[in-house]
Length: 219
Image (tube, rainbow, N blue to C red; front, side):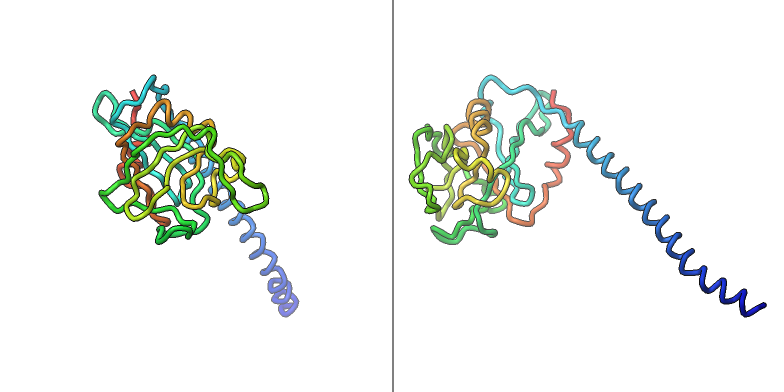
C-alpha cells in the first residue's frame, strides 16, 4: 500500500509542477499585458502642440537610428525643452557611421557638434536611378533639406517619392527619408537654414533630457 501511495504521488508531481508552471506563466503573461497597456496608455498621453504657422528659428532636430524617428524639439513659453513633432524615417541601408561615398551609411554627428541645414531646396522634379530596374524616377518628395556633414557631400533630409514603403526602415544611400507629407510639414512649420540636426549613433538610446522633454507640458 505504501509503495502504491509513493508511486501515485510521484506520478502526480510532474502534473502539479506543470500546472503550477502554467499558472505562473499565465500570471507573468497577465503582468506583461498589463505593463504593455500601461506603456500604450503612457505613450497615448503624449500631446503635441498645434503646428506653428512658421518656423520659430529656435527648434532643432534629433534623428534616432535606434528608434527610426526624426524628432523636432523647441522651447515653450516657460523655457522648457519640449517635443513639438516626430516623424518615422528611413536610414542608410548599412548600419554604422558613414566612412566614404557609396557605403550606404547615414553619417552620425559628434557629441556637441550637430550637423546644420545649409539649404532648403525644391526637389519636386528631382529624379534618381536606384539601379533596381525602375530607371530614373522621382525620388525626393517636395523638399530637400541639405545638411552640412563634414567629410561627406550630398546628404540631406528629403521625401520618399516612389519609396514610401521603406519608411521607417533601412533603404537609403545615406540620406534621411521621410514620408512625402512629413517632409512638407517639416519644411513649412519647423525647418530653417542653420537648424541644428543631431544624428545619433546606432545603439544610442534617448538622451535623459529627451525623455523629460517628451512628457513635458507643451503649452
